[in-house]
Amino acid sequence: MALEKPYADIPGTTIFDADQVRNGYHLNMFCMSLMKQPNRERFKADERVYLDGWPLSEPQKRAVLARDYNGMIGLGGNIYFIAKIFATDGKSFQYAAALMTGMSQEDYAQMMLNGGRSPGWQANSRVPRDG
Amino acid sequence: MANITAGVATSHIPAIGAALDLGKTQEAYWAPVFRGYEFSRRWMRDAEPDVVILVYNDHATAFSLDIIPTFAIGCAASFTPADEGWGPRPVPVVEGHPELASHIAQSVIQQDFDLTIVNKMDVDHGLTVPLSLLCGQPAAWPCKVIPFAVNVVAYPPPSGNRCYQFGKAIRRAVDSFDEDLNVHIWGTGGMSHQLQGPRAGLINKEFDLRFLDGLKNDPESIARVPHIDYLRHAGSEGIELVMWLVMRGALDAQVREVHRFYHVPASNTAVGHVILENLRSPSP
Image (cartoon, rainbow over all chains, first blue to last red; front, side, top):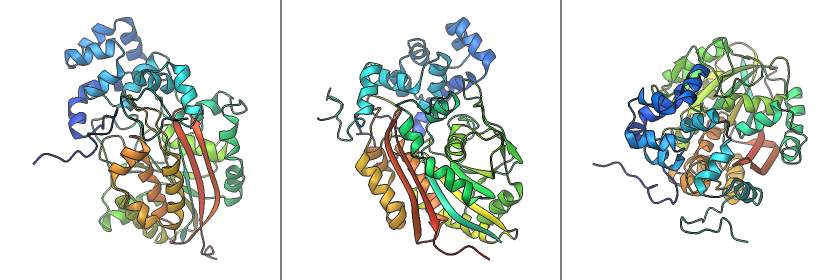
């Protein structure tokens, strides 16, 4: 019997569940390697060569090269692991979060100052919070 | 004997640690956050705990996807602040309490609460940011710390009720430790936030305030909140709040709330913080 996934309908959200952990194992472990300075340097020197040293799928590699964080998450990436990539790029969590929402970092930061995204937000709505 | 006298709950947002480390606490954005902890630092100095059992989660630092323990206790003599990708935070090494930690491990496993024993690990912002918020920037932390790590990264985390019952088991373990020790238990993480995907930035003040009230007055009900409610209403990372229930389970049924602070935003997250004291008088 399949596992119950009552969270599947939450808009704009991917839960890092057992299937995602399995699909994302190598992607996330590649990210983990970036916690070491020599690895960060090797990655920055030639990202493609460094990635080819890991058993990632080609779509996973392309998502990393494009810094497509939503893409990485869809392919099993977890935010705390892929954070090692934007940390390597010298970027903040707020930068990455804004990028994933499709907002400018300025608009995103302002939305947070206004109290954050409404819990009633739907994926197709372009308005972050009423009022 | 050892005695749990108080519980603390607080968010452990990494940007707060960075703001403190970079001397930004007086900036307009950060000043309200740190003001919310001024009382807490005075309280911490007066309360003088010998040991803090610090419930937190590792963020892909000590635990990768190679090993994912649901509950883990740090039994080492010391724990080094981790390099999370931009160098370790400039904070003191965390001194453990191996005797009490091992005692808790043996006691709770014999109470049917299985947990992983860790004799060597680095600790990340999940553990060091709460210490900074409550202790400031001392040359050495003022108390021993027992790291108690809960998996909230790989879904599913343990249920709220499991966390709450685990707290009760920890309480029984501490109560049976012979040395006279003033012990605090802290639950960290939360409150509502989502860091990933198009829905990032979600905040739910109503959920958070209801959680704060329930944590104090009706923890049994809060412990029954199912995971889906956290995910849907408090964001995918808001589920960290189950860790606060370990803390609450280790306290008396009746507690005194001596401090509460709630603020939006710190980076992507709602900051929540309470201090709860057990009502019974301390052992003579």
